[in-house]
Image (cartoon, rainbow, N blue to C red; front, side, top):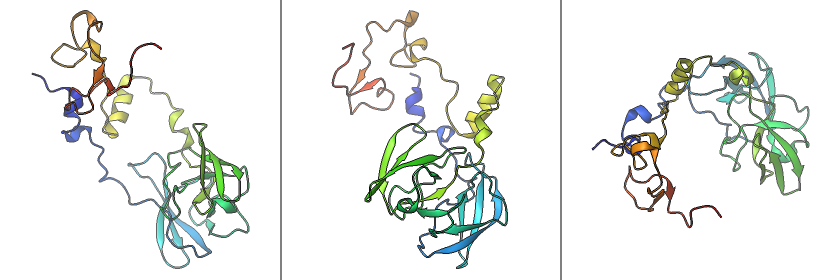
Length: 233
C-alpha cells in the first residue's frame, strides 16, 4: 500500500524547513537601560522575508533585528528613550502614542519579540487603557497586551515582495521549495483509493466518512478530526 502524504510529511526531511541558513537569533536585548544604538550593517537573510539590521548598542552588545523602512547603515536609533520617538525606536507599548505603527512586538515582556516579523508587515496602536494596550494586527484582529511589552516603531522593509507576479508555475515551485513546503497539491478525492482515505473512482465521496478519531494513526487522521457534529446546520 502506498504511504499516504500526511504520513510521509511526518518522516521525510523533504517536508521540513531547514534553518541552517539563518543568520542568527532575531530578538530584542534583555537590557532596559536607556541608550542609543547604531545600525552597523544591513543583511539579507535567506531564512526570512525581511532584511535584517545588525545593531550595536552603547554598552557594547549587538543584536539582529528586522529592518524598518528607511533604515540605513550608520543610523542612530534610540533604545528605551521616551523623548524623540522616531522610526526604529524601541519602547514599551505603554510609552507609545495612539496611532503609532509598530512591529516585532513582544507577547510577554522580555521575550524579545514574537509578533509582526514578516516583510512589509506592521501593527497599529489603537488604545491605551492604563493597564493594557490594544493593537490592531494586519489581519484586523485586535490584540490586548501588557504595557511592559516592547516593540519597534515603524514598518518592516521589503513590502514589495508580493507585488511581483509569478507569471508561471515554475517560479512558484522554486519559492515553495525554498520554504520546504509541499507543492503542488492535488485534491484528495482525485487520488486512487489506496493513495488517500478520500480517494476512489469517479471522485465520488458520497459514501466516504470525512470524520477521523482523535487517536487515528498518521495517514488516517485526515478530514474532520474528532468533530462534535458534521453536516449542514
